[in-house]
Image 1: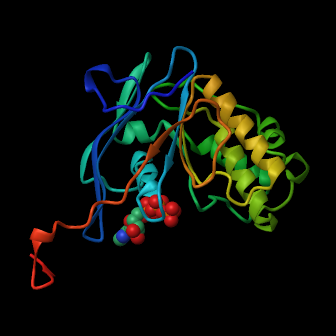
Image 2 (image 1 turned 30 degrees about the vertical axis):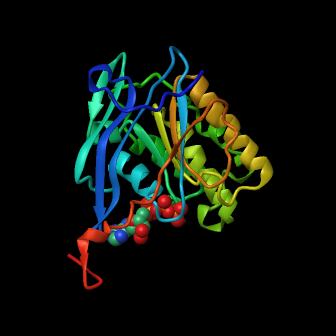
Image 3 (image 1 turned 90 degrees about the vertical axis):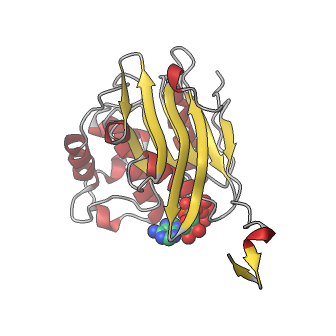
Length: 243
Ligand SMILES: Nc1ncnc2c1ncn2[C@@H]1O[C@H](COP(=O)(O)OP(=O)(O)OP(=O)(O)O)[C@@H](O)[C@H]1O
């Protein structure tokens, strides 16, 4: 199983296809003409790890695919045998695990999961791909949180909060997992549990786009290395000031 990372061919949209993506933030091009295709291989899915130095745009890329960052130009498309989705519909087929854990402190751990199970609609495309649709108890067990099911989530430690966010991915099946530094705050055992879940997601046909500075133990994960935008050309300056 190998992920393909290539210039996107819109005529063969298969999996997650990003074309010519440009995102401007604060007057600066954070992402410029980014293109890749993350394609499943038959029944199995694929994983792509986004790497690069601080501030290069890894989180911005994931947020753009998740529909959380405005895109200035380009196209994001998700295609499977059961349909093709674009824009907001493609975003709705993604689970986004960001830096901040989306947790309601007043609800118990189990109630948090029940909330997300009821809130998150099933996707239009790729609804049968990847890991998901687990019961609340099975998701808590998979995340190592079953003993804490009745605890108010506001009392969880940082690593436990992270594990609850991971459990959220398991109660609704979505074909694409967008994961920003997914192992942050996790101890070794929790990290191993997470990579096991990621492998099961890919083995079940799911796609993973993960931004990380650390190696992730997902077999055959391809790498998309983002490079900082080159500085402006010297010819663009006169008297030391940009033209
Ligand atoms: N809303 C915004 N307004 C202005 N600049 C922004 C905004 N959001 C992000 N940026 C800038 O965009 C750049 C890319 O940020 P991003 O968080 O995507 O980087 P990253 O590669 O994920 O970094 P890190 O490895 O530190 O997590 C940074 O220079 C950041 O300051």
